[in-house]
Length: 148
Image (cartoon, rainbow, N blue to C red; front, side, top):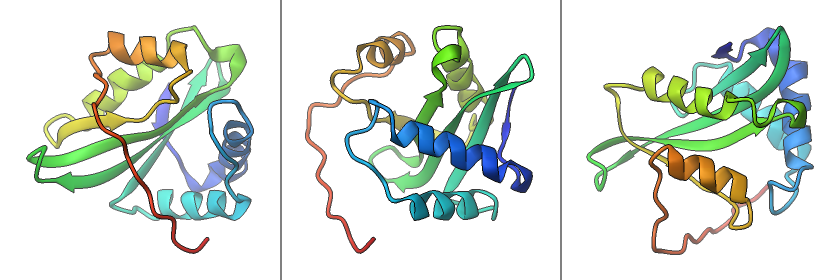
């Protein structure tokens, strides 16, 4: 089952964020108070972020987070698949594919593009994304961090 985050899910969601940000899937740690900010945005009906919880056999398996933005280049709304975290015991069981299918249906008719980032050495994720039709972009992204 895949469903939107609710206020009652706060503790579980913050735990999942902590697990994800202490996993090899991320390049650098993120301050814990950022987790709270994300939770608050997700449960406040923000037009910029949606968080979905993934469950299997009644157990919390992981979460997916998307950010929404507009792109002239894409000709409409872009759904940035920010994060997908599946607890190790739930990996390789089709939940990643199910999540991508769910997100595609959830934003059908509203999204002009789906986009994601992946660590270069995350071969499993890259294979999955390739099978789902995602292509690598031939440019480097740059970032300027502002106060934390």
